[in-house]
Image (cartoon, rainbow, N blue to C red; front, side, top):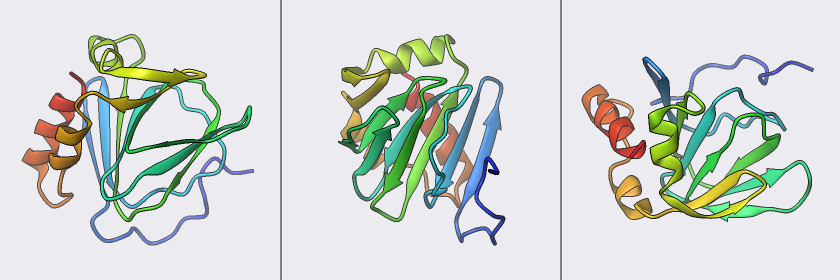
Length: 140
């Protein structure tokens, strides 16, 4: 089974930015199947909540979630726009982001205390400077 779905034409407005120790994707959901990553991932449902399904069962509904590395899950978006900020595990940014969450289940944290700010400041994929500022804010 391939790690990514079959290649398709990039959706309008899907953009990735890279910095040392972090990467930010803004655009439509990638619609991945069950998977785990090597990095911590802050997921933001920009225009609607999303569901996280741990492979152990159950469902978490959220607008913001931080998924720890190596946690097998499937994320299902119900809106059009998502933001994914990938952080090096154990980095200062990862630790700072993790402290913003109060609710957790199986190394999946939901409901960042600055969720309203994250949603209001979600990057427009056409504006690189805005995305860079968002990435800095999201990690704190």
